[in-house]
Image (cartoon, rainbow, N blue to C red; front, top):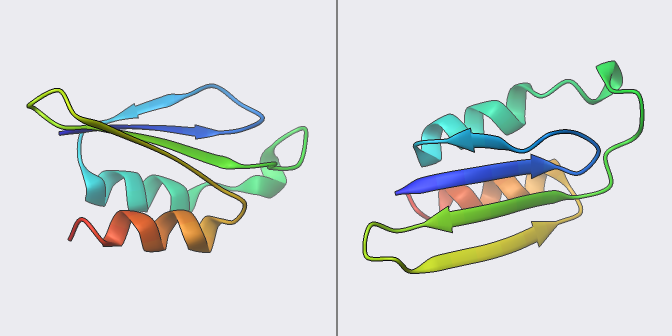
Length: 70
């Protein structure tokens, strides 16, 4: 499984696990960015080729979604 996290005002970040994606989002410092965060875009890729694409307005929603993969 792999996860791509795009905090929409910056560069995408390739992440290899759900827990690492949660940690990245939770630790991301929005106040250090030059522009406000507009969305959190997530791409989850399974080893069998399936994918899930999700876009969230808030950090809380993005983390809640990732936690469903527990």
